[in-house]
Amino acid sequence: MPRLGRYELHAIDAGALRLDGGAMFGVVPKPLWEKSTPADEANRIAMCMRVLLLRGDGRTILVDTGAGDKVSDKMVSIYAFDPPHGRLLSSLASHGIAPEDVTDVIFTHLHFDHAGGAVTRDGDGYRPLFPRARHYVQREHLAWALKPSDRDRASFLPENFQPLSEAGLIDTVDGAVELFPDIHLLPVHGHTFAQQLVRVVGGERPLLFAADLVPMSAHVPAPWIMGYDLQPLVTLREKQQLLAEAARTGEVLIFEHDPFVEAATIEHGERGFVPQRRGTLDEVLSND
Image (cartoon, rainbow, N blue to C red):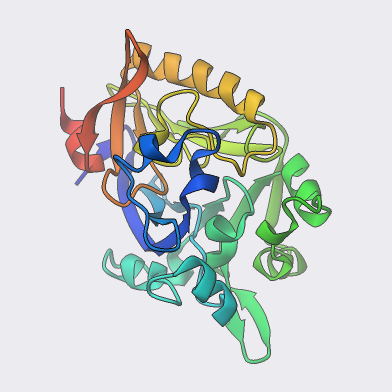
């Protein structure tokens, strides 16, 4: 099993979805992005919702939770969720983990495909899925999620995080911190305000859960930026900085939304940043 320092690591499948290819690649022309990421008849590309599981130091930690089991029929039609109610619980069960075993949930941000799985239906209402877990989000991001702009309001569904707040399970974080030993939170602001990436250190090479800064391996080239991003020039600068560091240190990036490539190292070549070693998390971490 893959390990990094004190933690056992697993990439967890929380389900699949499809999003508009033009939105996912912004100003990049379709003849370029469709070579590696073909679209369906509705111009949607195949994506996954990949969750990171860390076990060690007496903790069972999830980074993001997918969309969960309560998406509406309308959302299923638009985004082609497969299965419609996710597979986070079954994937965790395959590792012997029940919801009560999870001690901590780190949200990179509160968009529905990242945070929805932390809350489930309970009759006519909702309840936290992981009742013993603390849930961590940047204070600035939570404030934005509670009062988003008209442009990104549809990405924030109150039922995904308000039940956590009402249960007293949300802890806010301010800026870059070492949340737990060897687990660091790195705020970035291009995609949405105060998204937090998760870096794990302690082994020969660090690991970065790249979330929606670099959602798929096709997004490694710095100018390949999503149309969803609120501040694309900020995204560009953040990608250039973090990818340069990854190329220098041999850091492994985990791609949250790439259905075919779990992880990769980064190389800075003549034409910019490109994925170098690609494969499963175990393969890339063990490849010297």
